[in-house]
Amino acid sequence: MCARGKPPHYNDPHIRALVEKMIELEGEEIKVRVGRRTWLAPRHFIALHGLRAADLPDSDFVEVNAEGPLADGESITCPSCGMTSFNSTDRQMKYCGHCHKYHEGETNEH
Image (cartoon, rainbow, N blue to C red; front, side, top):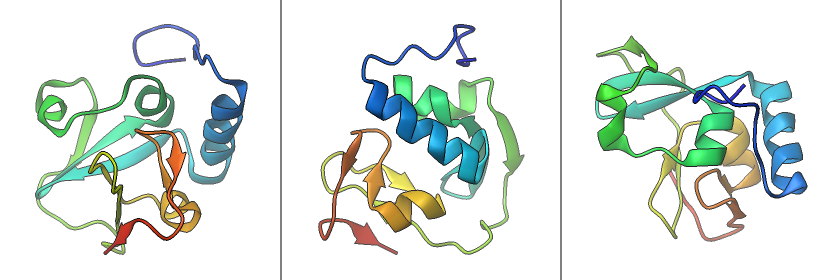
């Protein structure tokens, strides 16, 4: 179910399959960190609607840790849109969930 109360409503079946595979491997939600604050955000929501850092404090997403770092602290930043992901699958696949693109050799890994 999408966070907006609808079933996942993908236009591209390949994107849906990719997101569902990520959910199978990594779980329904992903930790999204902005500064020193961290929220749990549904992967389907991000894939379908995107996510702006400025919207997180007013969202219904659960804030899980206002101060501590993520487990490994590693991230990948998309060269196209600037979105940063801390997801290990995104890092491994060099995939941006916001742009829905693979960026082999173009990303900024931290």
